[in-house]
Length: 255
Image (cartoon, rainbow, N blue to C red; front, side, top):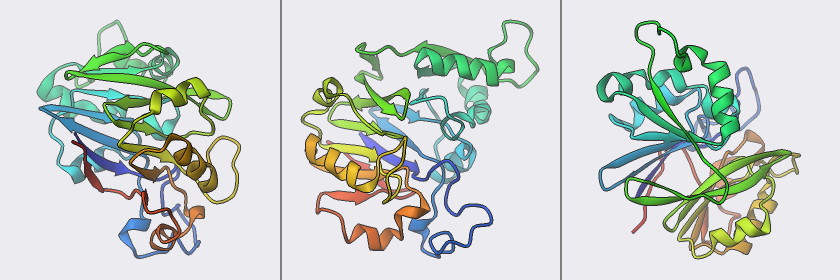
């Protein structure tokens, strides 16, 4: 399986509009972060996790020409606002399957009612096929079993996903013990680390490192990074040898 980090930033991205923070002014490409998302490919299958406001730009950059579906972690705009930009895929492929908690699908129906309407649609509107993801109910995509992982984004329950020996958890503040047990034996764990200081609904760097130490994956990548975490190259030097800061357009492969 190949993993392409389409975006590794927070809801505002980096640089933040109008900010004079040193990280926002950095000329290092690794300090420039679009909204968080990944593209997964294996054996002819192509899926993205989350579809935020930078989706069009991300698809043009990575050269993706087909998606077999979108998996959503939760309903916040930085993870869902790009849904309308699936139109070129719909025009070539037909209906696009989407997967997420029932609450996520309901939120999308409200915000993109013109896509989900049962009536006559405006010409050019894409069609989607909603699929509700349920806790403790794995499902199969492209021949691989997808295991939903329930995590807490502050007071909001959301899903991460495990596929084979790879797991993707973003916008995490805490993980129930019964869900941690589903993360044993990972080769790669992707988990969010917002900043150094504590936050009400996101893991800090130290919280993320403690979680990685608990799960003990072969290697881990940090994502959903804000400018307050610091400069990419400086932070990377402080991390354990098996932990890496992800960055936009990083590609990794798993056997």
